[in-house]
Image (cartoon, rainbow, N blue to C red; front, side, top):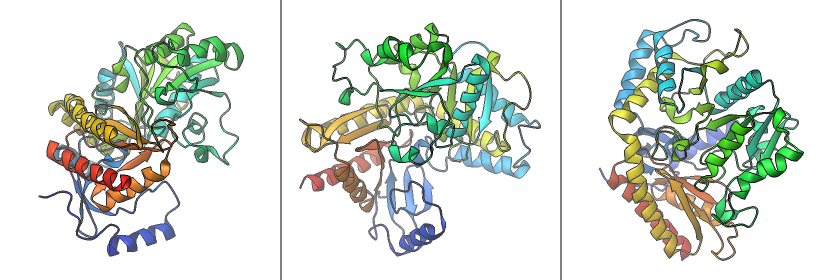
Length: 441
């Protein structure tokens, strides 16, 4: 099978009809490209007009094991034939308990753990807020500029990646204080690593905790080990460890948001494992269910709620989602996809670095494993962000058979499935370079 294979430039006539119906009846969200899927297998998407496109988006890092992985499809079908719902928050079933036990064993940290199941990353982070408040009896949180932890009203107070996500929704949960993230390409303090001595971490204790965030009032520090929607920003070595030490020294819970970066995406099972830091709470969603909605907050058993009813929901731990999640974990482990992500990520980074050297509008290439991005600028000297050329390249890409997603102010993220065949990855990168060449011309 030749991929990509474009028979009619997307969006074709069937796609345009569906896009128009969607725009008429579906609430406005974040749609970025008029790609209308009919089928998807592995890393190839067939649209309704018969085009075959290479998928570098994985449904926003959801199908880490590829679309319609046979193990996952089989697990979903089998569980759906038995029962699809039985309110796992109020009753019991084996598949939920088995998934919770397994997550407790693979998440960093020693000792017994408990898991709260929700339906999304936002719900997982909402649960983390409640766990932290209930355990510490404190009300404040530290988070980072550029962070994305969800859009529900609690975690929206922690999200700070784009103004439009917060605009018009005040007041939100009080007590969230934001600190600049370790964004070395655009250091907010105009310093250079490593001579900066991690000033962007030290300033938390040196300034913030002495002024607007008294440590005695801070329940938790929410952090993405690699920022997602904020631009796939990777902090420098030592930064995550320093944040963890600040949290520990001040009896603050370290809350690790692995919703986008977890489950092998960065070449480690968890992105935080690129450091020595061990989180108190780790949140998961997206790729956990391979497309079936599920989220989870994993934490030490001693942090559990002391009485029933403090927090719950209806669909959390849905049996079909749990079955899909166990099959996903099986696929990741049995097929060695974490190591494959690391190895294939080196190849992806090498090719992206070669492109960066050739094109003046690529200011930065960054990432870990198969969580990579390029940032577009007007020129490399000024580093002025150029979202317009980013958007043109993204549009040109899908018209030529490559599905991409933006992030940050002017970046494109590359998040193919961890089991994408090498030749399909290269075919997608060939399309990408052709788009760069046309943009440069």
